[in-house]
Amino acid sequence: RRKMKPPQSYKVLLHNDNYTTMEFVVFILESVFKKSLAEATQIMIHVHENGIGVCGSYSFEVAETKVESVHGLAEQYEYPLQATMEEN
Image (tube, rainbow, N blue to C red; front, side):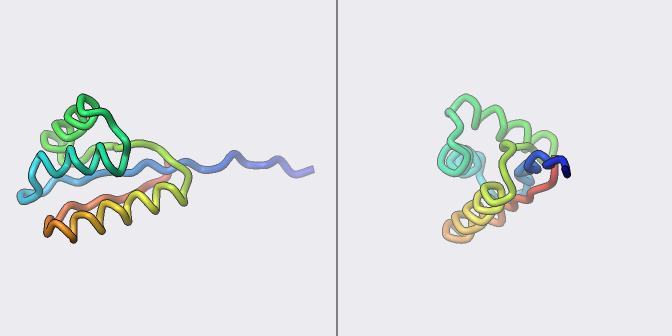
């Protein structure tokens, strides 16, 4: 019998830029990633100071959907905010 591999998990990353407001990043973290205001603020500060930050770990499909949601909202509000995903 072949061993079943556990499902891969993917982390979703937000990338800092010089145009997206801190308030919008917090809004994204609260709405797309369901973070509390305190968590969202902490992640936003980390992204701001380090250029990149982890929003959470998800299955491939969920991570992909969250990245698409970030890009859709950023486009709607005319911000260049980028999100990516990578295997944990």
